Image (cartoon, rainbow, N blue to C red; front, side):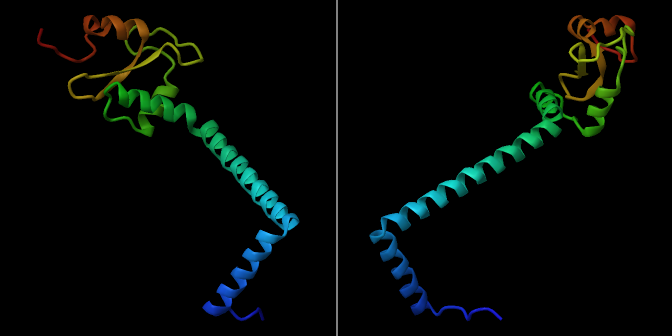
Length: 140
């Protein structure tokens, strides 16, 4: 089997001998420092690559959903995001969206924060959907 674990007194003695060796032997100190530097460098690279991979997989979705929440849309879920991604035409004027999702807007009620529908930028900015009567009644 393996070695028996050290008692606390043995551990103190072992650590003290390592500390003394570290303090007195410059070659050993350089070797330890280099090993530590390499470990931390490799660990940092691994962490960064994991972050980049996560951002690459989920970044666009998380960024867009965060923007919707920041602008007041409260019921943002994966289902709403999937509806947004699959929508090809404005639900008011039937204008076809380009492939880059830049023309799409997530319309929501500014009082309640509830998602209503996907509109083009023109319909969302000028409230053209109110004129078309998409099923909502407003007291103005």
